[in-house]
Image (cartoon, rainbow, N blue to C red; front, top):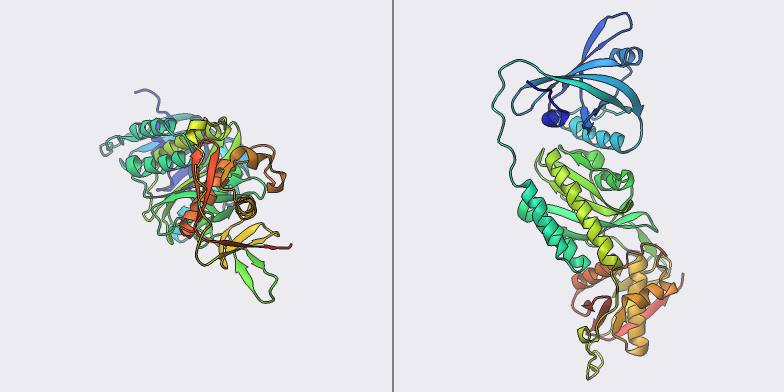
Length: 450
């Protein structure tokens, strides 16, 4: 029988069943102990959880060679890995991935206070042996993952706008992978937060809800630029609400809340977050969750990482496309629409965080808020309804960053927030790099000083 590879026994490294580790002291005295986690790093390396400075730890520091017995959760086949200790990591992608997975294991077994990761011990896998014994038949190989990836890639290749690309990605998860609850978040580099731009499977869309870099599964995946997957419910990585902030208005005692409800499940039992990266730059996070334990395998993670890579490339391409538009695509109106009628909408703009409220109801803030304020100001002062991405990029008052301004994502966020807020003000695309403001009621603007 040929040598067994690490990829063949990767299911043994999911943390479902504790493994057994054998070490030897410098004088040859053996020691055997259970370990809670063997973590797949790559085809030649695994990481073991360093939780206690016990005999196993002492032996490894004195003698770096060890063996680990792992069990396949489906076939009950045993495998013996011969490994050699290399180093301990206390930060970074592997450490954070192990920390999240261990939190799920600990929560599931009622050991949250005991299972605290102190470090990730990195080992080289030198040999893997199949242990003789009667194993159950191997389950059939999971079908359809490569097809799902192909369908998603083909769909993304046909997209001509960011809105299409996000909808296409979520549709791929739902239609071909059976993932019912998912969202895409984009990075706001200026404030180092992620904001939701698309979601599926929730009672509220959560568009505009924010998460700090480093918070929970999503924030850790963004900070470390690594996939983070949890197979059991853990309070350490959950969100009960959106990141909250409020703005004290000029009127004493009046607090205007800028919360947007976070769309996540109240009690998810499985979560996976993968970073969306293109050309070495973090663009956002693709996130999925489930109310069931062990809903996402390493194969699901592999597919999501690949799909996120395609999405990142599509976002970069769509946001860097030329913005020139043929005249035939945006015909000029022959007649100017009459002024809006009905009760006026009071729009208040707070310069402190560039938030905008419509009749005391929070709408948008930040750069997207500044964009919206420019559009409605030009509409009220000059009657303008047609705008271009190019002029927005060239307007210094908006404070767009010089590099990777993410304008398309901010406009999409604004468009979706307006659509959720009601029919009185809408934003629509009229061509590549062109947009139109549609106003159904008179606007009264109140620019609140900082």
